[in-house]
Length: 368
Image 1: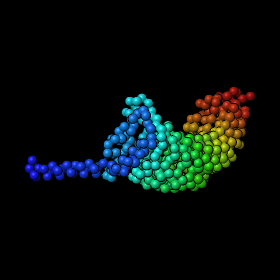
Image 2: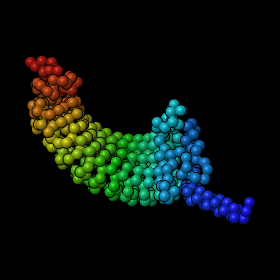
Image 3: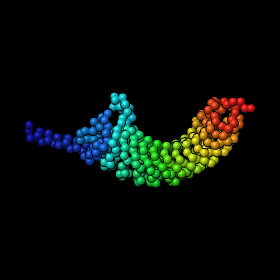
Image 4: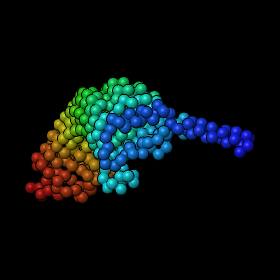
């Protein structure tokens, strides 16, 4: 081999080594991921078997990196997936352990999804709120406990916060309403208590707010009506009291409003029955009085459930002027009188009217 050929070969090898080093993830990111892995135990699927070698950006299951910086950008580990590793095993995943604070050393992390593993416990690491690029935090379907970090509002790029189906306790932090980019909030089925922040309406980008099956009390903040993008609001199965703000019926895109199984009372705002809401569930509260006779062509309901309250008097005749009512439930009230004829009443079953004071007519017994 000539001297020139030797130098050329040496230069080529040097470039290849340097290129490989540059294109690999930083050693600090790799160390953070391995510490994260060490705090978890997944015995059946071998989720972490691919987490070997020096480049955590290459074929590490569930890990994605930024193409330019080679920093870890996404961790996506789902215990229920159509990925071949689950199909081959013929089962969903189960993982125990906790989420290590080492995750916070991934300074360019944009998405953290550790969902539906059923056994992961412990708190949400408080340092998570120091991740400046975090857009998605999805921890649904585990046994996460403790409280939502008090300074969660620091995550001004966060668009998705999903900690549903866990064991999270405590109040909703006041800082949560600082999440100006938040579009999807899911806190369902936890042990959260206290009241909703009065300034909940500051979450102007929110399209879904799902907070059912908690211990949330107090009243429904009127400021919610300022969230002009909100399409789905579920506050069911809580301990809310007081009246429904009439302003909720004036929201342009609110399509689903679930307030069932609370302690709400007073008069139902007329605005709810002539609005964009198509799925309205107010069952199992303490509403009372006459049902508003205000239905009209703007009234379009796939579901209208007013059961298990204390309504009395006749069924409003204007219900027949609604453009559509798919499912109607007026059972378990104190309604009385003849059930109106024609649509939507002619396609409803007796269960829609059962357990009232003295309703009669089709589909119940004839009036005397």
